[in-house]
Length: 164
Image (cartoon, rainbow, N blue to C red; front, side, top):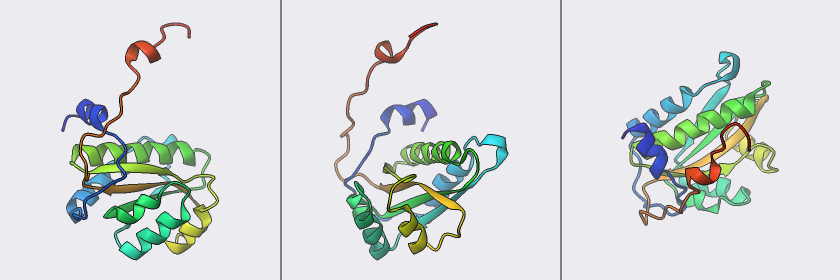
C-alpha cells in the first residue's frame, strides 16, 4: 500500500478477529519500527512481541484503557533506553509500526505507556532490563468490524500559514 493511503485509512481498532498474524508480517512491521528517525542515531528502541493469550490478558488488565489487548492476537510493547530523547524516538517508532501494520492489512490501537503507573509492572512481566521505559503498547490484529474510521478535521481546520 502506498504511504499516503496508509496514513489516510489508519484508525484505532479495539475489536479483532481471532485470526493470528503470520510471523513474517509481524517481522515486517517491527522492521518498519526500527527504521524510524532517531535523535543522534541512538536507536534506543526494543520491541517485545507478545502472542501468548495469558500474558496479553495480564497486560490488558494492568492498563487503564487497554483491556482489549487480551482479544488482539498480538501486543507489541515498545521500550526505549532512558536516553535524552527516548520519548520522541519511541513515539516515532510507534507511528512507523502503526502505519506499517495498516499497509500490511493489520489494524492496531496505541495504548499509552510512558508515565503510567502500570509501566514498571509490565516491564517486570516481560523481563525488560533496568534502564528502559515503556513507551507504548500496541494491540494488533485483523479488524472484526472493518470501516469504523472516525472523521478527521480537514486541512482547512488545522493548517496555518505564517501565523496561527
